[in-house]
Image (cartoon, rainbow, N blue to C red; front, side, top):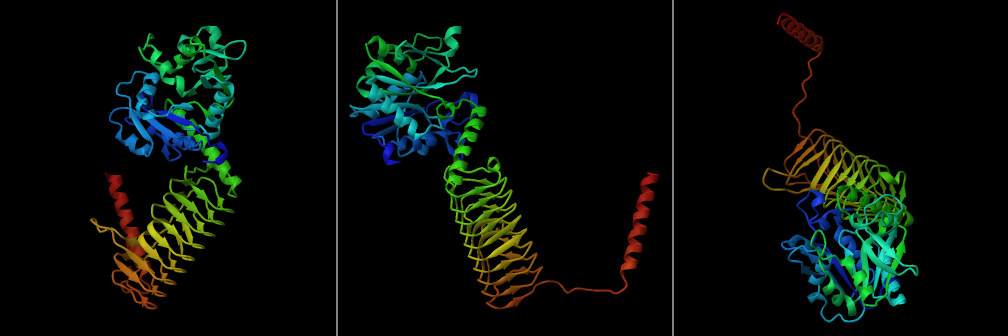
Length: 461
C-alpha cells in the first residue's frame, strides 16, 4: 500500500467462483498462476493498495484451496452459479455493518489491475455523485467485449453484451471491463431488483446500470485506454498475454531500481523477486518465486533460480540451477552446470563446474572441483555433507553423506569419501594405478582384429 492511494470507506468484492471451463482445467479459474502466484492474489494485492476496510472473495462450493490462497480475506460462498449479480448477493452477509462508502466489484481473474486504477474508480464515483461508475476501456480492435452505451452528456445508459448488440452498438469502441464502484447505500436495492430474463437465465451485474438510471440515479464511466490493466483472462491464451504484461512490468521495475538486463524480453521474474543494485542478469534466465539477489551479483545466461538467496557480488552460471534452500554467500561462485539444493555456500566459496551440491554446507573460501557430487540420498533419507572453510575438493569426488571434511583439508581428485576427514588433512581414496610399458600397440592390434572380425560376420549375415 502507498499512502497516496489509501481511501477511507471502501470495500472490495472479488468475484472468484468461476470454474473457468475454457481453461480446460480442474482448477478454479482465478487459481491459475501469473508470475508464480494465482491471479486472484494479484487482484488482492492491487486492492490492498487502497487500504479497503473489508475485502470479500466470492468462491464456489468446495473451493477450499482457493479459500486458503486468499486468506486472510473474507470468503463468501455462491452456492449455485447464477451470474455475477448473484455472486455479489453472496457477499451481503460479509458486508453487514458497512453502510457508507463504495463497494468495488472486480473480477478475480483481472490479474493485471493496478491499485491506481481502483483508486481512480472510487474517486470518479465520489466526485461525480453517481450511484455507479463503470470502468470502461477503449478498444479499437475486433473483440467480443460488452459495449458501453452513453448518452449525449456522457452518462452511461446501459451495458450491452456483445452477443446481444446491434451492428451499430458493436461499432462502439468503449467496452466493459467488468469492474465498477457502487455506492453501498443503493447497492443491494439495485442488485435485488436484477432479473434473469435472458438466454442463460442468469442474474447479470451489468443490468445494474439500466436499473440505476430508471430509478433516477446517475451512472458514469471512467475511461482508460489500456486493456492490459482491466480485462480478465478467459483461456490459456489470455494467461500467456497476462504473463507477458506482468513480466514487462516486473522487468521495468527491476531496471528502474538498478538491475541491468542485456535482453529483458528473455528474462523471466516472479511476483516476489527481489533484486539489488548493480545486478546484471544475462539472457534466458528464469527466476522462480522466493528469490533474493544481492547487490553487484551477475547471473549468467540460461540459469534457473527458485526459493533461494544469493548474496552480494556473487557469480551464478551460466547454466546454473539454484533450487529451494540454496543460500549463496557474498563473493561466492556457482559455475556452469552446477546444481545447488538446500545448501549453504559460504562467502568466497567456489563450485565452478559440473557439480551437484545438495543438503550441504560449503565453508567460506572452499573450492569444489569439477564433477563433485554430494551423495545425499540413500534411497530413504537425506543426509548432510559438511565441507569446512578453505577446504579443497578435487575433481570427480563423491562425498557419501553423512560426512564431514574439516577446515583446510584437501581431498584428492577421483576420491570416494565415506569417512570424516580432519582439518588440514590430505585424503586420497582410489585404486592403485597400474602402468604396463609398451603394451598399448598390442591392445590396438587386438581391438582392430576384433573389429574386423565383427565386420566380416555382419557382411556374411
